[in-house]
Every structure is written in structure tokens, then in C-alpha cells.
Amino acid sequence: MSASAGSDRLIIPAMVGATAVGKTAVALELAKQLDLEIVSCDSRQIYKYLDIGTAKPTPRELGGQPYHLIDFVEPDRLYSAVRYRDAARDAIADIVGRGKVPLIVGGAGLYLKALISGFFTTPEADASYREELSRLDPEELHVRLEGIDPETAAEVPVGNRVRMIRALEIFHMTGRPKSELKRTGAYPSNDFEFRVFWLTLDRKKLYQLINLRVDKMFREGLMSEVETLVNMGYGNSPVLTGTVGYKEALEHLSSQLTLDQCLQLIKQKTRNYAKRQITWFKKADNQVFVDGDKPGWKDFLFAEIDKLKLDSKLL
Image 1 (cartoon, one colour):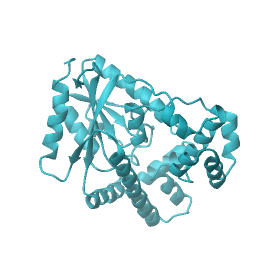
Image 2 (tube, one colour):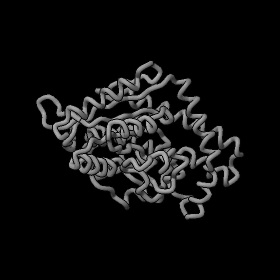
Image 3 (tube, helix red, strand yellow):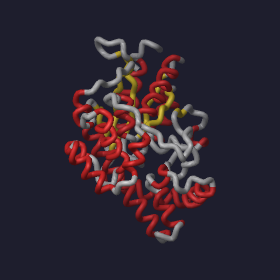
Image 4 (cartoon, helix red, strand yellow):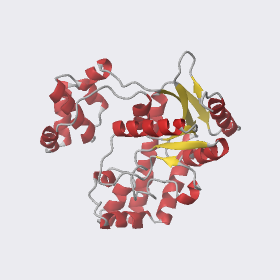
């Protein structure tokens, strides 16, 4: 890590990229070679028991390497980006306080944004108003949102009930549209700066890797994992029904999809998710682009992160 020019804030390295691009394997290699501690930035690996379908690193893969913020939330609990931000900052502060270097790794763009820049201050949830809105269908929610905040409505897909309800709730409690607060509201301070390395691959190659990963998940027992989660009482959890792989597996178990339909749909939806991740990272500022198709990319990445470590005032 290094301190930025004119500032005492340390620069923390982060490595991001689309699902299946190979972040975890590279991160573990980096951690071992440069003596780093990984802090996950994955919105699904945080959940207990969701192992195969999230490609969570196994104990054997970790080999005793510290890997923070995975496997600690029950699958029936929704976990917000704001809560992740607080937990990640605590983990980073602990690692730095022990004289070690953290490496942020993951593909959850919203979590990364929460950690790096935070969100504007908004009111706490209003349970009764949320319950009222939850009885409306998505189209009604979107019409309401268009009426009070067309800018946010244009950004939120009709199918995303969570974001629509939250935007309506913000207006209900503040009298101001979310888009206005986003431009003018107060943002939390941050004790650290981040240098983000974006690992990419040729799109065709990435999609092939996604297909191979899904095949591997089926071979390793994704269906058995989902059956176990159902038997544990998590079958109706929004976490499962809202996660690619688990949602389709549940539909197969309820005879809505054949096994082959389930397999192909997971591949398709995972490719679509990767495309959205790429779009997200393209819009991010101050990234270091790492082309995984070019010779020497790994040496470049290792050298750049090693510089941050060697420049650190802590070590």
C-alpha cells in the first residue's frame, strides 16, 4: 500500500472483474506470493451454505489463507451494500492495524461502490410503508416511481422491486426524489483510497469459461446443495430465489424446468450477469485495465500491487 500524494490516506488495492474471469485463483496466488489478506467483495459468497452455486473458494483452495467476508450471513437474511461497506472497512482497518496488506477481490459493483465512495445519506426503512408497497405489482410500482422520480425510474428495471420500493420509500420519508438526493446529499468520509485493477478477457473466451463453470457446478452437486438448503427451510428465501443458479435449480426441483433446461438457463443468465458486470466496471473511474489475453498481464498485475505494498508507510 502507499499513501496518496498530499494525503495520509493509504491506497488499498482492489481486483475486480466479471464472474468466471479467474479473480479468485489470481487473488490467492497474489496473497501467497505478496503476503496479502483477501477481503471479498462478493454479494453471494457472504451467505452460509451457498457454496457450489457461488463458486466459493473451498478450504483446500484457501490452504489456510485468510479470506475475509465470506460465509458469515444466514441465507434467510438480506444483506445490504451499506452493511457490507461497514464490515469491509472494519476488516481493512483490522488488517492494516496488524501491519498487513488487504486486497479487495470480487465482482459486486454495488458493494465496491459502497466501499470506495459510499452512498448519500438516506432515512432508515419504514416497515409499514414497505409492506404497503409490497402488495403492488411491479408495473404499479414503476408507474408510481415515474410519477415522482422519472430519472430514477428510467434507471431501474421494472422487475427490480427492491430498488423501486426503496426509491418510493425515500420520497415518502423525505419529500425529495432519490435522484435529487443522489446529486446533493452528504456522502460518508473514507479513511482509505483504492486503486482498482479490472481483470478482463475476450468476451467469447469469458462466456466459454462461464459455461464450463456451470457444468462443473452440476458435476460437483449443485442440485444436492439446493435440496439441502430446501430441507433446511431456506427454499423460499429471497436470497435463493434471487440468485442465478439457485433460482433455476429450485424451478427444476418443482418440475418447472427439465434438468437440461435448468442447466442451459443458468448458463444464459450467468452470461447476462457477466455482461452487466462489464457494463458496470466500464463506467467506473480511475481503474487500471488488466487485459488477461495479453502476454505478461499477470507479471504486470503482481508488480503494480507489489509497488503499493512496498510504498506503504506501515511496512
